[in-house]
Length: 41
Image (tube, rainbow, N blue to C red):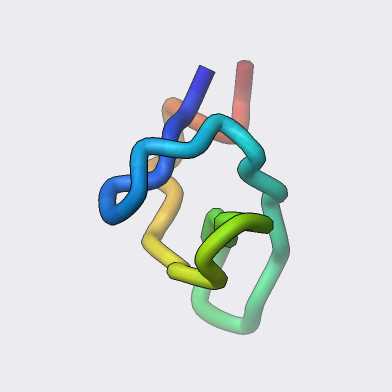
């Protein structure tokens, strides 16, 4: 499972944007890019 790169929380949601997909941490609000392998699982 993905975890936040900033606060290490596992409360990650995945979102779709124009550029692809990204993860957002529900705890600290940090966003980071999802690689193709991540969201295909």
